[in-house]
Every structure is written in C-alpha cells, then in structure tokens.
Amino acid sequence: MTTVAAYAAPAAKAPLERTTIERRAVGEFDVLIDIKFAGICHSDIHQAREGWGEAIFPMVPGHEIAGVVAEVGSGVTRYAVGDRVGVGCMVDSCRECDNCKAGLEQYCTGGGMIGTYNALDRNGEPTYGGYSHQIVVDENYVVRIPDGLSLDVAAPLLCAGITTYSPLKHWNAGPGKKVAIVGMGGLGHMAVKIAHALGAEVTVLSQSLRKQEDGLKLGADHYYATSDPKTFEELAGTFDLILSTVSAPLNLDQFLSLLRTDGAFVNVGAPEEPVALNLFSVIMGRKSLAGSGIGGIQETQEMLDFCAEHGFGAEIELIAASEINEAYERVLASDVRYRFVIDTATI
Ligand SMILES: [Zn+2]
Ligand SMILES: [Zn+2]
Image 1 (cartoon, rainbow, N blue to C red):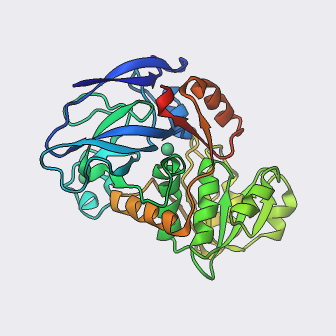
Image 2: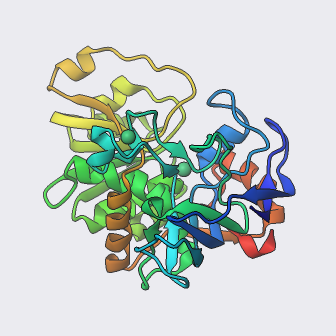
Image 3: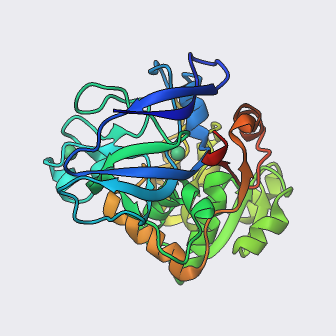
C-alpha cells in the first residue's frame, strides 16, 4: 500500500478538502500512474452530492485521468515506465460476459463495470478517482494517450470525449448526415468537435446564443436557441441524429419533432427525475429514443487516436486543487469554457 495525497468529499454535499488515501500495492498486471491532470465531470458533482443515490464516503472523484506510468507489475505487457496514459470511468469489469468480450465493458452484465470512484473493487475496497497524485489500475483498463495530444487537454476526453464519440459512431454520424447536439457544455463542445471531424453537418441546439461564436469556431455549421419557439418550427423534421448532452429535463416531444423519419434521439445526459413522453412522438416517423453510456476500452483508445489524428483535445480551464469547490459551483451555473481540469501537482 502507498499513501497518496488526494482531494476528497468527506460526506455528501460537504466541500472537498485535502486528505490522504491508500492505493493498493502494484499487482502482477497493475500499472502505477503518476496522475498529472484530472478533469471535473458534471457526474463528479452528482455523485459527491448524492444526486444519483447513496454514495461511498470519503469520495475522491475524478474519472478523466491523464498521467505517466511510474511502475508496472511483472505481468504487464502493454505499458512501460514513462508511457503517457489515461484512465476513464471504469477500472474493472467481469471480463467474461458477452458484453465484456465484445469490448462493451461499460455494459458488463457480470456484476457491472467497476467505477473509477464511488465503487467497490474486486476485494471489496472502495475505489478512489483522479483528484489525487497516483492511481493503481489493471493494464486492461488503461489507455494510451497519443504523442500529439497534451495531457491537460486529453484528460477530459476520457469521459466527455468517449461519451459523445461512442454514440456518434454507433448512429453513423458522418458525411451526408445532419446531426444536432443539444447543450454546449463539457460534453456538448466535444460532441461538436467530434461530429464535425466525422464529416457530419452539425447544428448546436443551446438554450441561448451566448456560446454561438465558440460553437461555430469548434466546428458547428448552425447554431439555434431552444428558448426561441421559432427554432422548433424552422427545424421540424430536419435531423438524422440528435445527441442530448444536457442533464436538465427536456420537452422530449418537442425535440423528437425535429427528427426526420427513422431519426434517433440519443441521451447521454441523465436528468435525476423520470421523464414524460407522448409515444406518438416516436410512432409517427418510426423514430428512436435511445441512450448511450461512455464507451468500451478499445473504443476509448480509438477515440483518443481519432482526436490526435484530427489535432484536437478539449477546451479547458486549468485550475489548482484549492479551486475545486468553486469550480463545482461554476459547473452547476454552466460557467466554464468548457471543462475544468485540475493540475494535480497542486494537491
Ligand atoms: Zn464523466
Ligand atoms: Zn462483464
């Protein structure tokens, strides 16, 4: 065991504070990572404040981890000391179910994936996330950060990047496809960049036009305010795919009316309450209402390689660990362009 510095929430809704945690000894197939940067994901806040149900405390959030390999176990073959690596939302899964074998570890049916934090590992010990100096992870749940990507802008790709890349690929965003991205936050701004790089015609649907200039600069072709009722008249029946990145409840019937026949509305943002829907909204036009959760390990690697090839990471605001609590408030107020990343040297 190693004692490492971390920032943790001691209890639900309590401010995060500096503390120390124990990391397990490096096992045969483990990689010890010196964490350099950790992104702040909206779901860190949901979990630290028990918005998604009972959680494990103290909690060290952080599942957008970028760092450098410091030590490897004797059986590790994929990584060596000095490699630039990342860890996303999961650190293990059963490895035996159909989904795990198919590279869909995030949908593991053999007990579920083991979250990077706020979960129990195979030994029943709580997992602690990226707001810390080091982490020990099985090599099968580690990905490589390509040389072309700096670690600070790569960190948010490990959740925001893969969460949007996976559905955009699955629902065939590409040339000739009209894709709308709902929300221009941490996930939304990555969705715009990725959908544009995939060759789709990209429209942002945001509450206001406040971030229009950024959206167009990041690759959107069109930008509309959903607070303006004319938007829904003008865009009726337009899109092949709508990807919603917002966790606020939406008027689904209104958004489904923007799909063409056979179009799909896909949620990656999750409201805390159940939503209502008139099923005629999907019956007429054979439309799909779907969801998608992060992506598998292999697909996460593919996404990182794709972003490096196209020369982009996330748009970030780099902060010191002492600013985490303030950053949480700013995320809740949508006051970040577009992802906070913690310089973990400041922990
Ligand atoms: Zn996340
Ligand atoms: Zn499994």
